[in-house]
Amino acid sequence: MAAPVRVGILHDMSDAVDDEFPGGSLEARLRPAVEERVASGRLDREVEFVHAAGLGLPEGSAAAVARAFGALDEQDVLLVVGPAVGDNALVATPLADEARLPTINWAGTERARSEFMFHLQVGSHEDESVLLARHVASLGASRVGMVFDRSPIGRRYAAFFESECGVLDLELTARTAIAPLAEDATDEVAAARASGADALVYLGLGLVGTVVARAHRDAGWDVPAAMNSAGLRGYDPSYGREIEGWVYVDMVADDNRVLADLRAGSDGAPVPAMTLAVAHDLGQLVAEGVARAPELTREGVRDGLELVKLVPAAEGRAGTTLGFGHLDHGALHGEYLVLRQWRDGTSVEVAR
Image 1 (cartoon, helix red, strand yellow):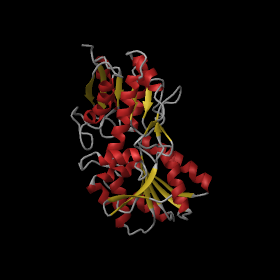
Image 2 (tube, rainbow, N blue to C red):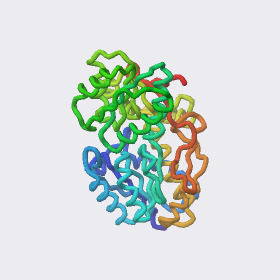
Image 3 (cartoon, rainbow, N blue to C red):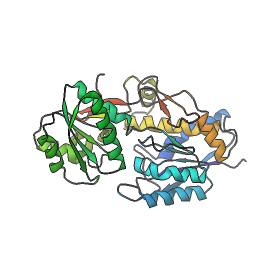
Image 4 (cartoon, one colour):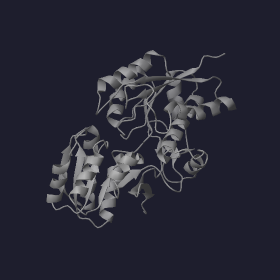
């Protein structure tokens, strides 16, 4: 029997390799797409998943991510899936190039793309900021207060948001940084309110998102509030209750038939739609990249990923596709960002 293709999974949100992907393990979510290619004969061997974990930023360290990546490199994997957090994807990018090991991160930063680093956009530090600025302007707001994480993620969001505010003639009256693990945001929200803002935006990883939302609510400040894809954490009901009424950026669209079919086939299991979408899209990229590889080497798998084209995506609006190409290592093409709002514990799409 042919030796299996080894694919690594890098867990950067936990020190444990059994860290659960929402609704089940990431490996279990990736397997169906791979097994489909084996059954059809497009893959002539099985795929073996190899795990390594290192709690990365902001709760852990960059060194932990580097060690986990190194552990996968030493185990002769041909492809790595992860990291999931933008700060850690930036850590892994030069490591992927140095090891010449194709890697697919599922984070939000377009800077985590390179010769060997591929990117499935679970949000976008750059595009989300533009979308949110346009949303705030569409509400008729003219002055906006911004609270952002004091981190590479937060600063990237903030820079693009500020730039788009300038384009839209939207006055940024407060630009206040907050520690990404802060336990109170009273002062930061108060500063935004004192600036005369008529809208509030939070930008960051989201560990402090509920803290900002709580300060906004406790202040009795009745202005529109929006956040980036940190609002995806609202699929956890306890988080969702805290950000009730907030508009946020999602990748789930009501008109996406690929996602609708996944939900219909989930047997009623309580799996968030976002989990189904991301897992499906990751699985398609892994399976297609390996199946299309002209040779089962690291360089071959990199070339195989660049041959993936026009695969229907579960993320984004109808018509969004997955694929890569020469110097094009961002997977999602089309209108993949969707504004939604948390209302009574339910995520509701915001009309365009």
